[in-house]
Length: 399
Image (cartoon, rainbow, N blue to C red; front, side):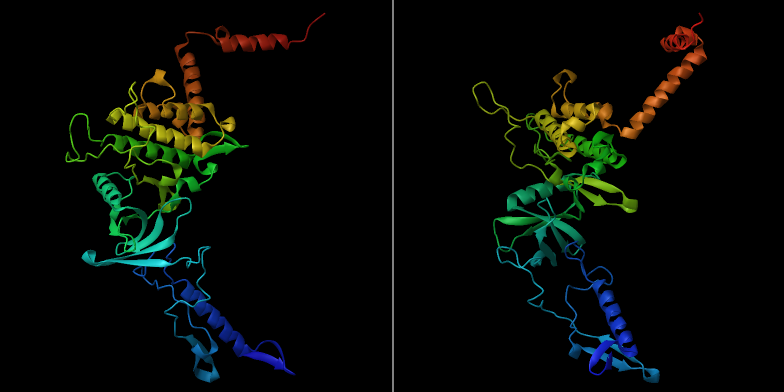
């Protein structure tokens, strides 16, 4: 393997160099085949293999004789059980990255859940028979309720449910399993959502505008699905769902990676128990019955609070964006209840670059209209008078 002189190794010999390069090449190849349990892919993906290290001690690396005295190095065995020095432990002494296998007899499939969570969220990466997915642990009845609600929704920005798996180590809880997501919206920086220059936010970026519009669209869709408990209707009405607000904090709004770098924002969870700030009280201090309008406005208020959290301190934020957040929060009662149309027409909901282009276009049209109608000469307009005044002041005085 080596070039040796007087018992000193100077480096690889010619054949040793070829063997070492071939060994590194095959290790690199196998490393590329592993299924990524952290990313939720599974061995059902073409070419993927389980997370088993290669046995690479010298007694398990072999060679074959080739023509002209050449040799070819080969590996052949894997560690079915993970070696002790591979498994790291948490502060509590539990193995990191441990995969829990939950077998569901009635579905004839397995659910593999990674112990670690997607940063900043309650979701675990997971795999099941359908492929990559995510799972969230909930009390079993709550998981079933959310599953039923998600099944009622038919919208591209509502994450599709896969099923509910009982937790074998806790009879009171279950895993709600959903389509795969990349990360939470809260994990992205301000430049992702907003047009920022010298630390000042001028408005939404191109992708931020699309995400905000999609978020408002899905909230408007869900607001239209609520069953009217006051009128006595029930969830048996086609498409109706209970009066449960959507969880709209930035850690519960997720995105999926699409083609050509695009992202799709999705919501997935609901408040099974009504939040305290949703329930209003009578003069006698008794809770009022929650209406559809209460929950709808609560959802819009949650969008406003999420928007404020994303853009941060208000000192360096465009006034229109701050006004939009105030409108969503219901801080502008003179403008009436928040509506989807009201949001779409609010100047803060526009992309920063589009607003600039729109203002330029309007100015151009107004100026062209004046020229077209010929109702006024330029000298008679305010602009014209200002220009003439400047021109006169700039003339040299004759003595």
